[in-house]
Amino acid sequence: MAADASTEILSDLADGVLTITLNRPDKLNAFTATMREAMVACLDRADRDDSVRAVIVTGRGRGFCAGADMSAGAARFDVAGRAGADGEALRDSGGRLALRLFESKKPVIAAVNGAAVGVGATMLLPMDIRLAATNARFAFPFTRRGLVPEACSSWFLPRAVGMQRAMEWVATGRMIPAEEALASGLVRSLHAPDDLLPAARALAREIADAAAPVSVALARQMLWRMLGADHPMEAHRIESRLLAERGRSPDVKEGVTSFFEKRAPDFSGRVSADMPESYPWWRDRPYGEE
Picture (cartoon, rainbow, N blue to C red):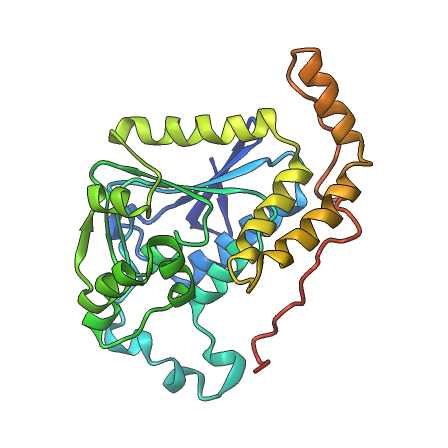
């Protein structure tokens, strides 16, 4: 397993699956700015590397991520006092990571191996599929610290579990057991601790082995961005355009041929070079824009 930027994040690429591991086990993987920068760098490389077909994010040791590293005390959250400026310097660090995950061209699978608290919980929300160990726990404790939700979770969390449950979890800041996370839809499935990573890898391999990478990248953005659409006509427009463009691609011929020949497909389309002309179909949202 290779280290990225610092030993606080590890990455390993095998069989088309990139595994990113939070690596401060003695601190329950409490999150630092160095970790955020290293994770973003991993995601950047994954998007550029056509051999990466899916990404898994997990933690080393008995915790997934215990939240922001608070070794500096309350000063850790005095961004305005540290930055001494408005605008870009005041941007939430967790939000930067969440937005980068949202923009990913590769599907991201969370393998939550233990406690996921604060940013450890909110970073999960822009990931596509979340698996958890039976001993995992979750918390959004911001109000208990005098803070407010971060990492774009005021947008992601109600969409993941509904407004009523999201507000309860945020307002109380209480610990959420794995069973409740499963029942709410926050996680897709629970696994014995030793079975968690094998289950995540099996799912990632299914994506890598059976699906066209360009189609997966497009579908990921279609589903996420339609969460904010105000009418199904928005989906119909982009689906029609992309179906027409993908219908001319070699991937479609290979997909249909492999189906009739009863064999695994060998898709040639590359995310780095073969995205259709219609991509991206959305307008970028700069931070400073009101």
